Amino acid sequence: MQIDDSDAGGAVPLFNPRTDDWNGHFRWQGYHIIPLTPIGRATAQALDLNGPRRVQIRQAEELIGLFPII
Image 1: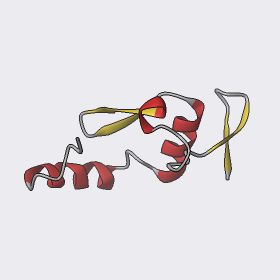
Image 2: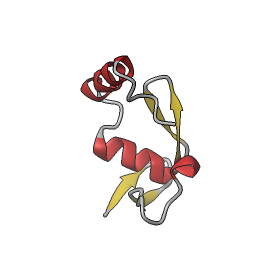
Image 3: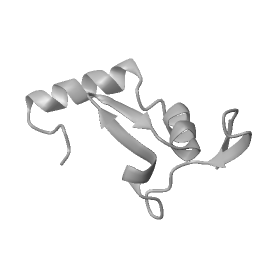
Image 4: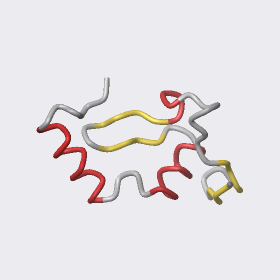
């Protein structure tokens, strides 16, 4: 699947966890996932990786020792 990324000037593929390195496309900043590449931006947008509910889930996971993932 590909998503249009105006910053990249066209369609880019989504992050593929089987072939792509997470650290090459994303980094953590607190509870938010920061995209580093066009693939990261497209994936973050398509999957709403930093939506309010996802951020709240990460905060709750921290309380019970499930976040951050190391």
